[in-house]
Image (cartoon, rainbow, N blue to C red):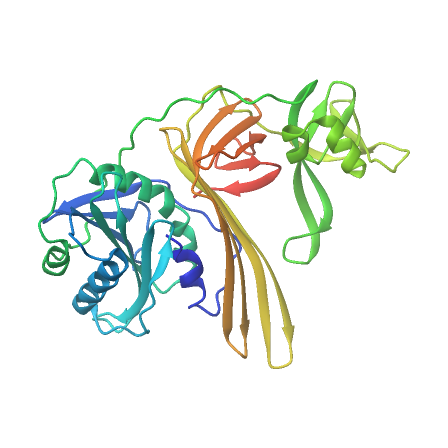
Length: 393
């Protein structure tokens, strides 16, 4: 569901430094309707996913069925605040709207419907607070949750009339803390680390921060047996050392230890300099995570009559069954004129395998990525993927 880009557009101004997300969902069933809500959702916030069906509709246009079902459901929530627009969502269809709840709060709602693998129809409804942080925090998990919802619906009996069922069966959100249990996924084999690779280390230096201010920055580097190091982790792990050195020689240098202190000599420098550094931790072979990790980087500027903020949000969600979801979203908003826009680059997720300092990701579309992985702190709430820091709650 492409709700992230749709809802960000509706929210013009927000202040934040980072984005994190919970990886588990509360699951409850009432009147044949399954409700999913994130574990750890802040008090006063809403992010509820309702799953209806499956059903069979004979000789009915799928696009029209989704739109008419959405309109019927909207009547139980409140008057729509937008014109209806139906959009293709791969082989499915989706539409969005908003309404004012009983407390006078504007809420965002998204609907999506389509076909299951057995040809029966399904229908989803998402209700969320009109809040950018909440949408980004949990919206990154929707595509992966949809895969599990469809698999669950395939095991259920057919609903006679899904449209009437949606309208008549009102589900009350619950605080049931049972996590959603996913099906097991075929295990992947390990990715291969670059030749003569030793370990990843974190280093601190002075430079330009993501906010545009000059200050302390952190990064992850890879050390090799021949005394070289690199900051070019992605290409080095995926394409090899020779390719990285040829394309970005300035990202390479030499390292040494003196009195147990790490010293680096940059590509264009003649002297070694001591750096502030810390040890990272590798993953055990085949380790499975059950959390989401993310961050937001933003840069603001002020000018006469207003200001603007641009940035990027990225998140990785991992499940213990071996699946992951990865989301990257760019955003921009301004005050004064009060406008907002975003672009999203999002895959459907896939399978993952962790082994030492190497992560292997195989997306559902067949794309395979091998890159670096490490834990950046002792309690393992911060991880490094491709040299970038991602944080959980």
